[in-house]
Amino acid sequence: MAFFVSHSTDFVGAEPSRYFGLFNANESASTLAVELDISKALDVLDINDNHVGIDVNRAVSVQSANASYYSDKEGRKIDMKLVSGQPIQVWVDYEGTTLNVSLSPLKNQKPSRPLLSSTSINLTEIVQGRRMFVGFSGSTGSGVVNQYVLGWSFSKSMASLQKIDVSKLPKAPYPSNKNKYTSLVYDILLGLLAFLVLGLFFGAYMYRRNLYIECRRWITSLHKAHRITGPNPASRIDLVGSVVKPIGLTLEYF
Image (cartoon, rainbow, N blue to C red; front, side, top):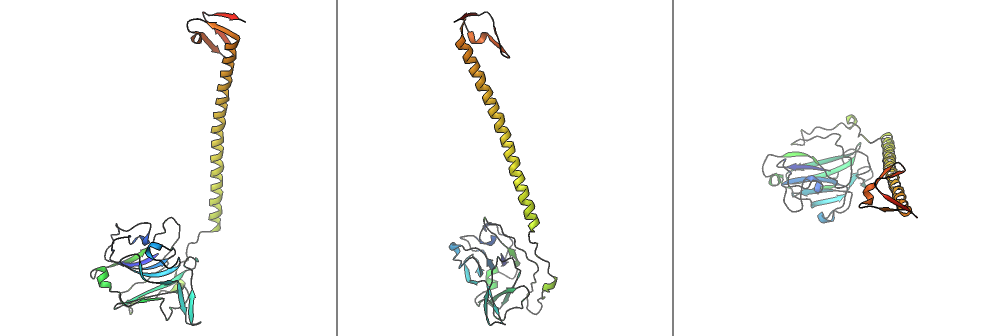
C-alpha cells in the first residue's frame, strides 16, 4: 500500500498490478508516494519484502528502510512486520523540503525519531503547481492481501492537523475461522458433485460403447453362420429385437 500526492487523478499509464498502481517502468508520473511494501522487486531495487520507502515520480525509492520504529522507552529501533495482521500508525510530515516518515504499533505514541527523513523533496516541482490530490493506492500482482485504512487525517499545516483517537477506530474485519470452514465445506461438496457428474457421463458412455460392441459381435456371428446372397445383402436384413427376417434372400446353411 502507498500514500500518494499527485497533480492528477489520471493513472491510465500506470501498471495496474505493479508499482502500487501509480507508476510504470519507464515514464515519470509527477507523483510523490510513501510506500509500505511487502514484496521485493529487483527491477526497482527493493531492499527486502518488508520495507518503507519514499518514491518521487517513479517506483525506485529515493530512500528506504526496513519497517521499524524507534522506541523512546528502550532507546533503540524495533523491527515491525507489515504483514503481521496488527494495525500500525504512519505519520508523513512535510515542511519546506523535508519529508519525514514514522511508524509504530497502533497504541504507541509517535516516535521522537523518524524512520525516514529526506531533505530534498520539492513538492511544488513534483505536482507541477499548487493543485494536488492525495489518497491511497495498492497492488499485489498475483497475490491476495487485505489492506484497510481504519482512519486518517490530513492537513496543510501541522498546527491544524487533527489528532486521531485510536480508541474510536473500527476493528479490522479479519476473516473468521467459521467463514474459512464454510468455504472449505463448499469446496469439498462442489468437488464431490463434479466427480459424480463426470462419473455418470463416463458410465453412460461405457454402457453405450459396450452395447455397440455387443451388436457388432452379434452381426459378425450372424454373417459367419449364414451366407447371404443378393444384389445388396446388407440392405435386405431387418433387425427387430433379436429376430432376423430375410426379405427376398436365399440363405444357404453350412
